[in-house]
Image (cartoon, rainbow, N blue to C red; front, side):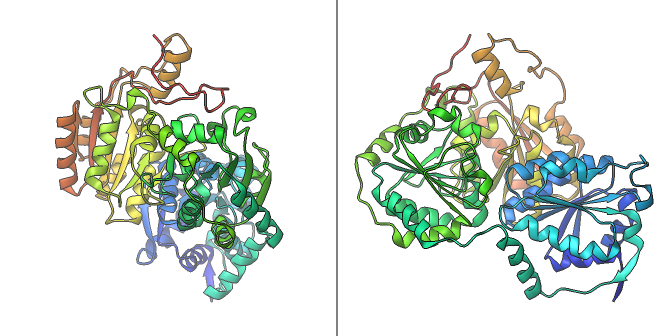
Length: 566
């Protein structure tokens, strides 16, 4: 069957199971959007206010569903506006397919209007990218993009399509699901070597001989769907489980063996356990600097068993004693029968003692404390809610205080730390799950960066809730300035508009202001009763700190537990 490039792209998207595309039209993709309009019965399009918002929405859709998100934008500034979104997805291993338009082939390389070498720009922040130069290659490039984005270590892939190819015609040959799966597995086979029994036996021996094991679980557990295997391993070993930021939800935070966040703002139990353990079992983690801090002092009494799908992460930041490369879910399934069940020991008693040590700042000692806000949200929304965040103090408070019980329920920018991420991610999650409650926890600094997406939320009537932790400052930077820069608050005080309640009203969104526990509880109940877009502006003390905290360059057991500074 003869089809245009635009028609072929639509057929490829449907072939890949795509039901939603986020984006903004423009000259170079006008043919694609014309075809998308004709295919509205098969593919839903969400028009955002800004291309960056579209990229974060596609990312949030992917994190919430486990399926690849898709963003479609025009050439030049449309394409460059999604760069931050691609980098965000790349750092957190999120499957994303970005489709960009470009100027016609004969104008490429001539500094044409709205021309950018987007494949050159995005090469360091994508798993792969393509510029399609022949209409006959279009279907193949799109299929490869989805296969690469979702196999091995997931990540974003970009397909750049010159405008003239979207109007040209060629023969379209569908690919049936069996062929697609075979093709996908051929891509994955390049990533995954055959795991030898001897390698598993060494890992099992380490697990069985350890006296003080600590499991360090990350985003790879969530991405591979290995939460059940993680729970089985921890319960068989009676081993405590520390979580990276991306690992939240991999094991319920209230599970007796969960010690919570590890690293710069990790719990006393997680950080101390890492320093005392004789074996660190690292599952789907990359040992980021926010976790290990001073690498020479991290887990210095422990052997490290690292299980990860990406060989580049093995021995990159922390030297391992033994490693297994592959899908963590499949490896744990093979490893579990080889592991002996353990009895409770002194190690478990130590863990329980450390779990009781918390900073005094975790207590509700102000009119409206972050812990109260977060715990009240959970009390009202329950375990099925999806929580997104921006980046900053509120993000760490969410990781510390929200009792996540399910994977894919905490969507946050971990690696890149992208302020402005949460609003778009909440849109993507709510579009994916219309019947689930979605709440975006935001800081007043972060929310300013993509606040224009209130128009998207209002237009589509997305019943998500935005809660702004408004402390009138760039809180995390101010915290550092208080602790380490003699309280020199350079460019961090946000004593300026907007009034977020009035801003929400301008978009037709109901909003409330809360300054104490009673007013917040009333606002939350009113907002949730609407089943419509809503915003709550919470006034938080400007000097509320995120504690514990490990100062830069210190080992992770050297935690600041109480507020310091002027």
